[in-house]
Length: 59
Image (cartoon, rainbow, N blue to C red):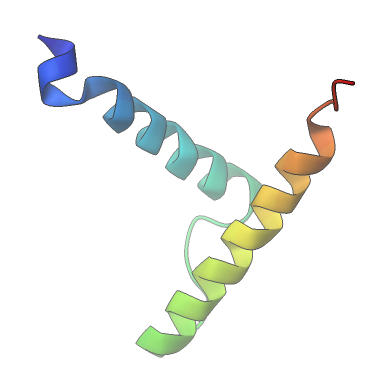
C-alpha cells in the first residue's frame, strides 16, 4: 500500500526539507521571487557539498 502511494519518496523529501531548514535557514531573506530561487539553489548546493564531504570513500 505504501509503495503504491510513493510513501518512501515522500518521506525522503520531508527529511531533505527538514535538513535544509535546520542547517541553513527557516526562511529566505531576499524579497524578489527570482532572487529567492537563486538563494534556495545556492543553499542546496552548499548543503550537498557538506554532505559529500562527510561521506566516506570506499576503495
